Length: 95
Image (cartoon, rainbow, N blue to C red; front, side, top):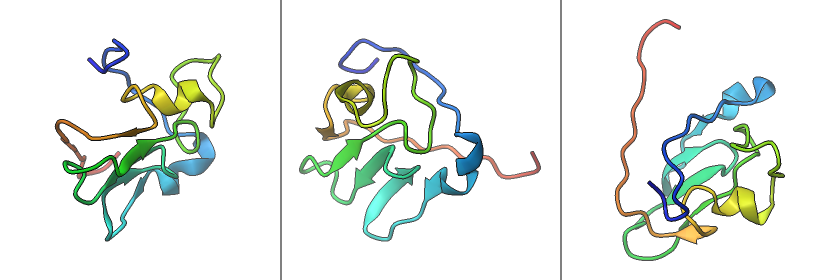
């Protein structure tokens, strides 16, 4: 559960953005989309991580707009945050 009380949710990649779903940034942790979810280096020490849903991933609510406060605070309760725990999964194989 996140600070806003939202449970787990699966966010779909926008049809024209599959190539941007996961980005490698040597100066950051995992980066999903075009900064939809950005985990910065040394994320446990300062609020260098942030989320801005709606760039590459579909918004979780049809009433949200990309760049809005709702879209930016949905995952962590604030735009910038310090993650408590990070867990990343991947799929290796044919789709």
